[in-house]
Amino acid sequence: MDLSYSPEHQAFREEVRTFLVDHKDKAPKAMGLGLGNKQALTWQKLLIENGYTARTIPEAYGGYGAEPDILKSRIIAEEFTEAGMPGGLAGQGISMLVPTLLEMGTEEQKQKYIPPTLRGEMIWCQGYSEPGSGSDLASLQTKAHIDGDDYVINGQKIWTSTAKQADMIFCLVRTEPDAPKHKGISYLLFSMDTPGIEVRPLVDMTGVANFNEVFFTDVRVPREQIVGEPGRGWFVANATLKHERGMLGDPNAAGTRLKAIVDLMHRETMDGERLIDNPVFRDRLVALQSRVFSMQFNGMRLLSASAKQEDAGIAKLIVKLQGCELNHQLAALAIDVMGELGILYDGSPHERAHGIWQRYYMFDLGLIIGGGTAQIQKNIISERGLEMPREPKPAQPSA
Image (cartoon, rainbow, N blue to C red; front, side, top):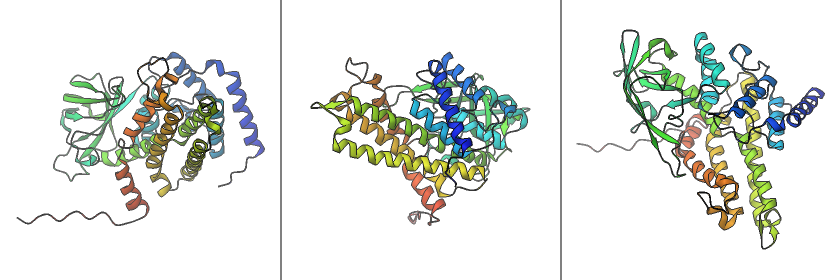
């Protein structure tokens, strides 16, 4: 990988900087999913038009249509982070479903779903986990049988992020109940307004209902709303999971947090001394900074492999594990920097930044479990990346 910046790349960096200066008044304070945030949706449209998000997605599907360029992607991330400006929208639709459809969807599905998803006009949730099928996702029991031109779905999903706000869901259902565990699963797309769907919010340890239970009772979905072939949903699902792991371990997001912590350490004091000048805290900061940099360079390695259509191997397998643990440790440093004020919640007059670091700390702890636990991720790394033998199953007691 050639990391030297050509005159073209230097000119591109200046172009990005000029854009950020010229449009700083248009940037929203928060992006989220874009729900009801007209400023965020306007910002997303502006970023797509200038190629600062959805950069390599074809114009035919609502993207910018640029050729992959690893260094330009890195320049965009660096300059947006340095300016403290939000990048494009992310989430289960944009970050997970869109690349899955680009790889495996029909032309009709790409035309119908990708453009409004990129614009933030269509919000998605993911119907994967079930009460008895979390880490062992392939054991899922939500069923769908064919009735005429429809699949009829019955079952339950859990830990479904944004289900209460979502317009659409991409959902795994068992369509061939007699097939082996990893076969007989299909990947369906359907509206959350479909009759027979009930959503029940679940309050997590942040005190907010970030998750939901979703119940399906005779939910009818047209058969053409399947991605891939019937019974081959596990193959499609693994493509989506690959993109989910990348989203949860996004090194650019970690870089943004790191910069915010540096700013916080310049402001917060202890016995009249700035925390940035305290050797103990500064040592913790530098250690985390080195890990952020390593994740960013690993991200460039992944981009390079993708551009060359190569398998990134173990580089792609470490992203979720390392990224989620790193984000939690960054939040922990911010909490400690704030001292006794770091434990405040619920709008205390002394709360810093509306309690964002407290929420990060608790939510990121959950993400070490969600999306594939740290233990499962370590098994994936050892078995698929390092080719170590699978953990032996304990012997069954004799009758």
